[in-house]
Image (cartoon, rainbow, N blue to C red; front, top):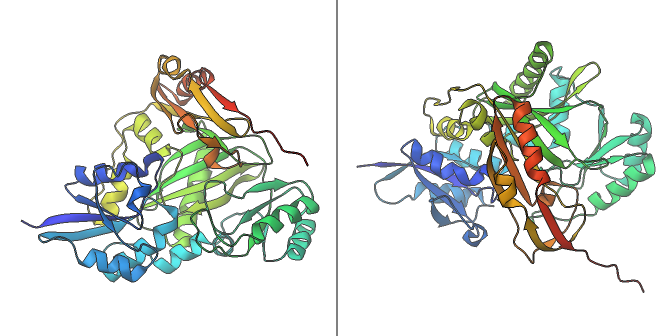
Length: 410
């Protein structure tokens, strides 16, 4: 009997990325993970692992064309932002469901993405793509400070900073433009965006197959950084604001050609309505898909696998509750002595999951992005506000003890 295979091209090593193999099995598919370095994965969720040069589209296509005897590949996807183009290119070559690789490349370049959105009439911040410090200085002066400076590619708030004046913008841009590779050792474009700072609360619309499945309220750390410290689902919004955010998000994915599968659309609700910050052609990170499932019963991971496998969508709303997550974020860098209070956090009514990500002895470097998070408390309640209160109480019971590194002075 032929066995249908669902191929994952690499995976997120944290968060909901590791749940994709279970979703594939729930749909009767055999999950196969293609990985350049299988040792990166402490857990693969029960997937079969095939060592593959995942930076090479031909190598990925070849691996998909050589499944075990009796196997047939029916879908190719990834949970990692870095491999969406590769997975799509392989799927297209195999005649499987996918978005256009060229459209995905445009989406992943924040400058190109913004230009497409603006041309389609989607409201975005004023922005400039700059390749030199001089261009950054000119853009900051023209836009008016404060401005947000960030690399044209990347995710998880990596390299994103609010700059109070042109000199700060130039200094941050200088560091970004001098980088030769990203955190995975891959070459990076030597360009940044300099953009208008939009005041107001931040939200994300979770989109599946072009339709908004729900809206998340996002909690951020103190400026000038944009570390996400928690999420509430569903966001508490007036009907008019919810409708405006939904319309903006769906218009954005249409303009960018993301008709199939997930998109994570980040917006700010400014004084004059929603302003689209960026679109990511993947599911949200930060355990947001888990929040959606806890609150509504809708499984976006299952829906994503079904979409790329050409199966009918199994996503269905079966509940109307709320869910929230708060992250454990240390205030400074150092060597982790330990994390106390996990049992006390678990005892909070409404808390359904507490997890720590680092072991004692780990070196913690606070850099202002998602890697600062060393644990979380996730809660469910009758409403998002009730869940948020439980998550906040739980995370308040957790203490991370660090041996702070001392500066060595000459």
